[in-house]
Length: 187
Image (cartoon, rainbow, N blue to C red; front, side, top):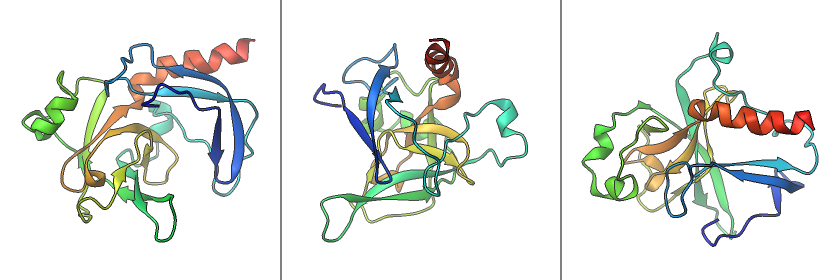
């Protein structure tokens, strides 16, 4: 996290699991939003249930027969009477052009090298009240049927309502993800 601390457990829809291993992306640099993604290995298996299921990586084979437009991303908004925030999923409109961010001072400050090949840009037709929500950093950008993960939320203001949502492109991470997963299977 931003304080340099590593989490020791995760909560997945009222299921607790300890973290056995965390691997940050090898090209991550503290304070940067580039490559700001990590993989975790839980200390136990989590049972698939109504609200807990794996997602597919965006392999070409996995995309066959699916609508390949990334459709939803997560955003957190305050819940009345609770300290927690409610996670909602907002439909994304479409990919946006890097030109949507290249001339914006706020985005240029956070992404001085531009978007490159590992970051993607998305927009939404929904207009939330400014300041109402915040992007669920690290949350997923999913297919309409929520079976394929296309991106990991990196940055947006107001849940991407008025300015684009920037995500880390999961397809570009597949070799690293495979190496992490296969390393455990060989042990």
